[in-house]
Image 1 (cartoon, protein in one colour):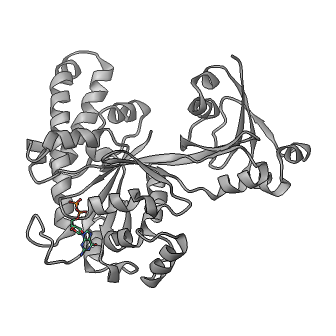
Image 2: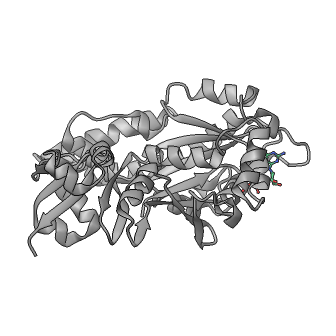
Image 3: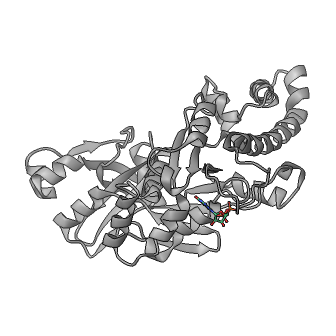
Length: 366
Ligand code: GDP
């Protein structure tokens, strides 16, 4: 399953945010969440299209797609040298597909800041530095392995790898994250990807603010915006504490009312889930029938056989073709047979790049 890791310094509000996500009562009908381990939660990805399809098909089961969220506690200054939970923490991050970086953007004299003063930009740099040091270690040990081959012999792969590693090393030594480095060729990209660098993972900054700043942010959020403006990363403003209190109310209506009272249409948590899905570069295809309507997750750009493999590996191996209906057609014609009669169903082969919202039917050999 795809995972987003929540990182940040102690006391910035990571657990508050995680609890907000995992609180049973926080489930608006659209966001069922369950905790599978103390620090791992599974969140359903809200998708209006799936609901609409279910209204047409009246299937026995409706199964949305999910993303896992992991609360990664224990990152402090010096983690890369083994301080705090240090290396264990870093290993946890390595397993995630994307990072939600929580930054403290609220004042509260009662809550100690590990570095004395509220300064989200400095906090971000502390975390970045720890991750960069770790990546630099990875790079250095790889360089030690390929350097000789690359410089002496005719090993072309080793040469390419060496160049990729040097480019990363240069960036990291300047205090930049691996994600700021890009590569032109497929070979280079493959080598880069296979390093699984911590600072290469897509990141989203979650500014944790007080109630009064829930809508417009504050000076801390502005400072974060300025500091990350070249990263192209998304910034999300969430008032985690008040939202976790609102999440305690029993009914959806009550929760909506209190959200509106602080000026919000949609909970920060709901926005967070949607943004996380985008951050992971994920899209959804759908399957529809009388037994089951279901949403399936795939990576943007995947071809039909790969997507078939999401359902079952046999579907990928024996792939013959895919019958594709566009979501809008399904809805406007009102049934699969009506779409077919109108000639709006297309038959696609191995090279078809599946689009977000496609309703797929795979034909395969067994
Ligand atoms: P973590 O160490 O990053 O997981 O931080 P916690 O979620 O445990 O939060 C640390 C403390 O800050 C707790 O006492 C929270 O209640 C408090 N806290 C979290 N978010 C906010 C906020 O937005 N405003 C205020 N005033 N306190 C908050």
